Length: 280
Image (cartoon, rainbow, N blue to C red):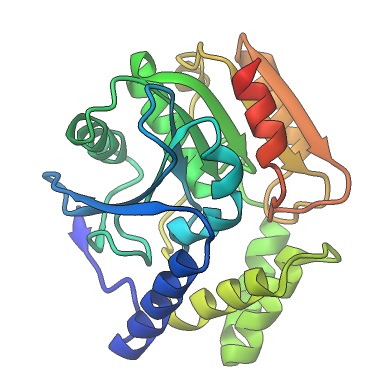
């Protein structure tokens, strides 16, 4: 593991954490903020919903934090005790320790979080890199996962070379270039302006990870014997939704797939579909 500066500077950190706190205040759902100790660093979480044995763990994407789930809390909290975890090494309130994608450290870290929170078993929803973490954890500790939902997950197929080229190119043009990258990711998809503001803030103030992506082997994916829902957008420019669907469909024994024709990598308003899957 290594300790990095996740934020580009203290001013950027303060801007992101100020937005974080404002998002929690305005979410309209009663929440609790929790901190637990792990051997990999302090881990911060946001809880919603009443005490319930049916637990839903939410794992956000890269260069993001738990506030990305705020708009879904009111739906999930009606059925579950919801725990949104700030992944360590990302721009939230957890430790800035960035673990290797090549080892089992991320799975071990989340296992420690489950133990610290006395979570025997839970449903897991993972978005993008959070989907990667969900797969890593469920593959190592399948007995701790009831059902799993993967939203545009990393680690199943490689990131499109065309997107990587554009991201590198536009990153050379400062703030305007970073904004252009987000425009490419969003495409023609209509999203709440707050989502765009959140994405732009992260681009401006977070040191994105440049690690080589880890693609799971078939043998690792074969450990995912629990029911799995994959949701992808047909217009995803980062990873091919069709290729993800095909690969998962050829390996996982209990897979449901939903492909939204009008969405890209940023998947919003999916909570109802997710709850239906988890409940049935």
